[in-house]
Length: 285
Image (tube, rainbow, N blue to C red):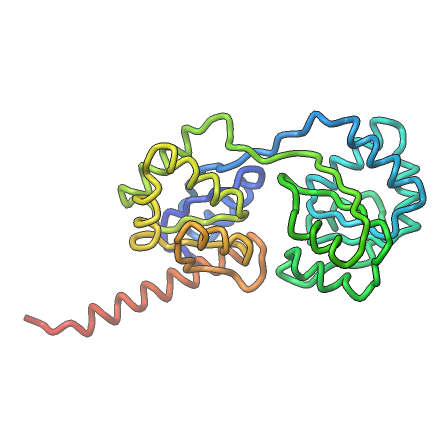
C-alpha cells in the first residue's frame, strides 16, 4: 500500500539513513537524504580506562547505558585492554539499566543481564522516574553518556544523593561533507520537499546552526512552519524543533523509525483527504 503517495521525505538521519530510506521507498515515498550529524570517537582512552577500572572495582551499585553506540564502544574498549571478562563479571553484581532498545540490543549480544528499561518514549525523564525508588543516596551510579553529556540526568542523580561516575565515548558533530545539507536548505525553500523528518534532537540543532551561519535561519523556520510537514521521532526531538520556533506536525505513538514512517503516511493521507473536501466544497462559478 502506497501510504506516502510519492511524496518527498527529507531524512536527517545519518547512521541508519539507508534503513529509513528503505522504509520510505517500501511505503511509496521518495527518500531525500541530508545527514545532519556524525559520531566522532573521542581520544580519551585514559578516561575510558579509568572508568573501566572503577566499574570493575566493586563500588558501583547501578550502571546506566544510554545508547547502543556508546555501549558497544565501551565494551569494545574493555576488550581492547583485555578487561572485557572483568567488566561482564562486574555487571553481574550491579543493577543494569538500558535506556531503550538500542543499548538493550548490544547488551544482549554480550549476554548481559538487563534489570531495568524505562517505558516509552525511553527518555531520561522516564529513566529517572523508574530508578528513583531504588534509594541511591550514597551509592555510586555509573553512566555512559551519548554524543554530549546528559546534564539533566547527571544533575538529577546528584540531587537524589548518588555519586555519579561518568564517561563519554564519542561526540556529535556536523558531517565532514556538508554539501547535502546545503542542498537541503536550498531545496526546502524551493518547495521540493513535502516532509522533513528528524530522529534526534542534534539533527535539528545542527541544521539550524548551519542555517544561522549562512543567515537563513528565519527563512528556514518560516518554510518549515508554513510549507513543509515536520516530523519528530519522539518528544525530545520534538522539543528541539520547538526550541527553534518550529511547529511539529507528526510524532508517532512509539519512538521508532518504522512507526515514524507510518505516522508520516497517516498525516499525508489525512491532509490529502482534507484538501479533497475543501475542493469539493468550493462553489462552481
